[in-house]
Length: 330
Image (tube, rainbow, N blue to C red):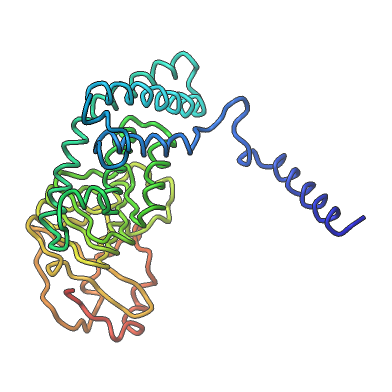
C-alpha cells in the first residue's frame, strides 16, 4: 500500500470516528445551518440600496428609483426570510412557527431600513466633521472601513434584538474580517458615531454608546473577565460611553460598571500601563473623582477589584512586580 493511500485511510478512519463520538461536527439531524455566502450577499446588496450609485452599475436607481428599490427589496426580502427561517428551524422551532416568525422578522427588518439609512447619514456626517483628511462625504461612503463596519452593525443589530440566531454574528464577523473592526451586534450605539482608521477596534456585546462618539484605532470596549463563561450571558459586562466622547488610539475601557462621562476626551480617561503585563482602566464618569497625571507608588489603591471579575494576578503580587507602573493620560 502506498504511503499516500495509507495516510488517507488512516485520516479518514480517525475523522469518521470523531464524527461518531461528537455530534458537534455535524448539523443537528434533519436540520441545516444558514448559508454564510447568502447572508454576505444580502449585506452587499443592501449597501447598494442604502447608498444607490456607489456600489452598483445599475443606472435605474437614478431614473426609476421606486422601481429599482422595490424590485431589489422584493428579492432581498425572500432571501433574508429564507435564511431566518433556516436559523429558527435549526434552533428547534416548528416549521409553521418558524415560517411565521421569519416573515414577521423580515417585515420588521425591512420597515426599519429607512431609519437605518437615516442613522448612517448621521455617521457619515460625523466622519466628515471629525476627519480633516476627508475630502467629501462621498469619499467616506465609498471608501472608509469604519463606516462599512458601522453599516453592517446597524443591520445586524436589528436582527440581534429579534433574537435571530447565527445571522447577526455572521454579518458582524464579515465586517470584522474586511475591516479589522469588531462590533458585536448586541452593542447599543447612538447617532453620529464614527470610527477613525479603525483597525483593532473592539466593541463588546453589552457596550452602550451615546450620541456623537468617536473612536480611534485600537480602542477596546471590553469586559474585565469572562472566566465564568455562559454564567455571564445577559449580564452587563462592557462599559457605557456617554454622549460627546472621543477615545483615542489603543485605549482600553473595561467592565460593565465603567462609565465614561459626557463631554469626555480621551485625555480624561486614565489608564494603567505596565510593560509586558496588562492594561487596566479606571472607572470614570461624572460621579467619579478624576485622578491627575502622576507616578503611582501604590497601585493597589487605584484598582477597583472584585473576586468575580478579577482577571489579573493576586493583588499582593502587584506591589513587587509592577515597580514601573505609571498612570498615563494619553
